[in-house]
Length: 297
Image 1 (cartoon, rainbow, N blue to C red):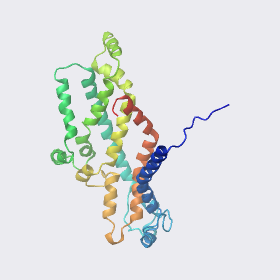
Image 2 (image 1 turned 90 degrees about the vertical axis):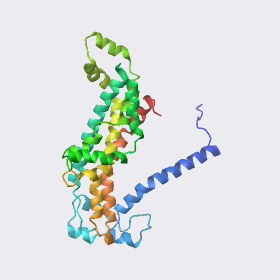
Image 3 (image 1 turned 180 degrees about the vertical axis):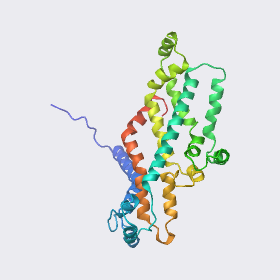
Image 4 (image 1 turned 60 degrees about the vertical axis):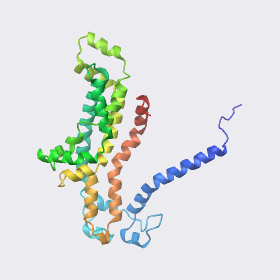
């Protein structure tokens, strides 16, 4: 006779579930409110701003953002008439986020290999100095980085967007070093006996064995770069290099303050967040697992 292994609900478990439900509701409610606003008619939205459901349900805001609605249709639904070239800004974000992420992950992996697997004098001292960069507020580095990019003539270019933050990341370096410290040295020693040098060992042994944590830091850096706002605001001056997050702010500023297109703005925000949502949905479990076996908990 089968016996049930389910534990009875004690008052403590009920309280824990209630706390979890409250936390989930508080976390998810802003996303629901964005979706509710994006599905509302901009004119009707002003008549009932506190409604929990879309007011005058319509897909018009998404059509405006995706360039599927004419100016007359946008104005008829309460849009400001301002346009948002989503495809162009999405392309810029992909170029910016992908290039910077590939560079920072590659350089961090090479540095992590040098700090974790190679023997050289002053290794721990240099690593400690680099880790100190984690304690420097990012706002302090904005002005020196901007002056450097300006003097190099890289303002309003993808090179200027990528250069200051595509070379080094203290967290990525630390994360990968922690994993590489635990790799088996016997494989490296066998490769050394066969005549392999450090570069060959790095590219043919260490990098393939570090695929899981590298995928994790790649995703984390990609999401962080995708959502970055301050640096693109300083460097990018034209539509050719403007990423999607910055374009949203320009779209908001181009609307008259007396008739702001809240529905369009929320729809554009959802479109901008959709790629990151899909990435986290697809690879979220891999990120958690990689953080676990690197010992960073």
